[in-house]
Image (tube, rainbow, N blue to C red; front, side, top):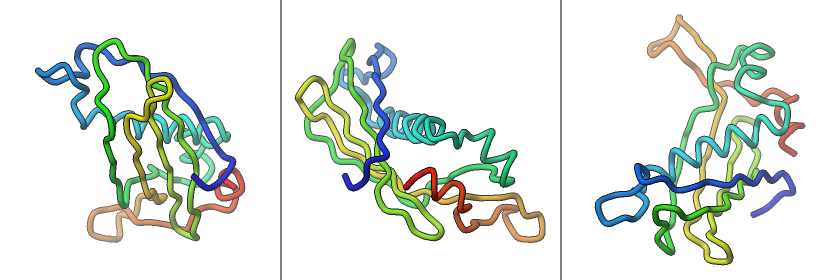
Length: 140
């Protein structure tokens, strides 16, 4: 992980987070990645509401994502989710995630995100924009 902008959350694994084998069903990690990314942005003064009100951003959507699983997580585990800002470009930012149970690494994840605004003049109605300077400064 490459910068000092870090946010840590505790995640308690519930029964509904697990598959029939009693192991966390992998899509839940992606749900947690998303929640951790938004918590990190909020901790930097850049909540979804703030981004929308200041810059018209309707979301910081995913451009790329991935995960690597090294150990299973199970019902009643308490995971520490550490999320950091990695690479910043003019149009994207990367969030790197590490999930641990105690000293045991459970998984790592990566999200590349961009900022999107509504634009009814184009097909799909949304377009990517350059990261606002204030957001870039908050993430550096």
